[in-house]
Image 1: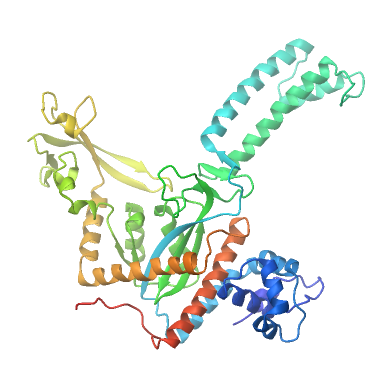
Image 2 (image 1 turned 90 degrees about the vertical axis):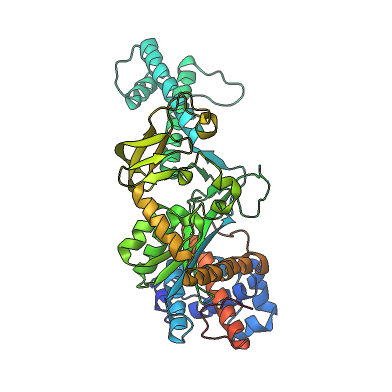
Length: 477
């Protein structure tokens, strides 16, 4: 591998590292292959384990401080470039062909305190309450001290100029009325700054952690209880091909829908183009369908209603649009009670990411007196449905693709390869929480783990004489 990016991470004006960067990279990769993640554990192994000593090749064992600095400060600047160098090596030996990509995501807990949460709704409420107090206090202080000003800074400076002596603190000292008013005013301004900083940190999210601002509070995959506590974590997206990890993305989004396009764009930025992409129902959206149409990549995404549509309860639910007859010529639906739902107008709907969909709004002529209304809608008026015709067409095309012979084979392999990779990482490797904090450092952690996973996988396939295989074939026996 070309270690030039790693060498560039060191300051040319700084002192020479005690351990060569290439040697440190080997140690860290081997440690990840052996499920040894903590810097203290790696440092201890470098003094006692013969394999680590051989990798050092006569160099002194690095301290845990050196390992921690190397991982968080040096490696974080070039880990992504090193990872894609490894995937290119796998391509050269015929293990990767950039044909079939299987995408899946999981949530891994961040190294943040559980009770360090900041919620957007609460922040909005507290911020509005503080602004109201500021307005009231501003008028009271101006009137009380006879100050003519128009800004908070001018008021604070004017009040400070009225002080006849220094402010006192601690027990045994009596504060003046001016000092008490000044401290109250400064506290309100301090809270304003704090809430403004919180709003900048949210970046479209509903929560973040004070000890790791990049982490979002979300339900972990291991929390099977219905009322399980929310934990700070990251949404990790992996792209798998031939059982190897070929793409990694770390996101603060709780939903998988909004992570697919940034993940694919990151691959394309590294010059990687896939013939087709397979993903589960959590990635289905009109935005994602449209994206794959624009880049010319065939996608096999399971519709969100695919499994439910097979049930008897789903087919007998008269409230569902799928169970209504549609007349394409007249552009109208007919419910099971015989009522017509006609197109009223067409509007736009914008998603969280800014994608616009064209929505057609249908409304029933008259639902009054219908004996099935309580089973059809909770609205007091007539039944309405909102339909994106483009999305329905895209969903139908995707359904046809995933039910084809190729689609069934790819979906089976997605379950084996994607779910299998996460199973190995979480269960076999025991990797369930990050050690570092911040998106950049967390990305470095997962990239090193992915590189170690790929090396172990290559060794396993060589031992099993399965090199060059891309897909598991369906057992027809």
